[in-house]
Length: 288
Image (cartoon, rainbow, N blue to C red; front, side, top):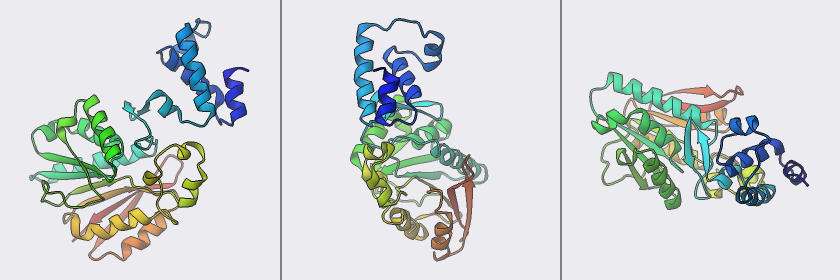
């Protein structure tokens, strides 16, 4: 049985694409090269690796874990079971964070603190550190990235080091916006990609969900348990005039607006939609 047929039989929704990616990986080439060299013979070692990877993929293991990296936001990020695989939707969160930080720097002469909450493998932190490398080096901006998982922080440290920005980011194990002794000031920009899937969806184990850390996915019965806790902390922790950017599930925008309406103080709430037209990023600005 061929590799494509094996993956199709195993239930892969994209068997040919999966096989091509793994062949290219075995040959240490990209997929574009592979498609131009379909008659190229595969060395024995590459053939053995490819066969093993096909079986792993047939067992449901995500390609990002098999290869050990994910191409995301034009970067190659290390991926393994210590953290979630970066999603395309989260690129929108990174773009929104870049916009808010840049806007803040343009109108505020003081040092700005940006906090990436639930950083996971550090995908958003890497993007922000690369984008604002000079401001971070000059201490015009401080970037903090935290996660409740020590394993995830370890992976984030590896990704930051791989992109030569590890010295520009403060990493710590912490729950949400818990105070850190070395950071007395409140954050001006909070970026958060927290668990927002419903428990039932996580427990289904569909797709990559059966392989990724459940704690990084499971947002409780309605998917909002962790986000709800973060929202409750924002009035006390976010700087006046600060903003918080949250990635959410495609049907959670209305619920977030309801939760935000109950927060003390005055808040402006808006959303950004993903390419499918779903509300994907919620932006909260603390007006006072």
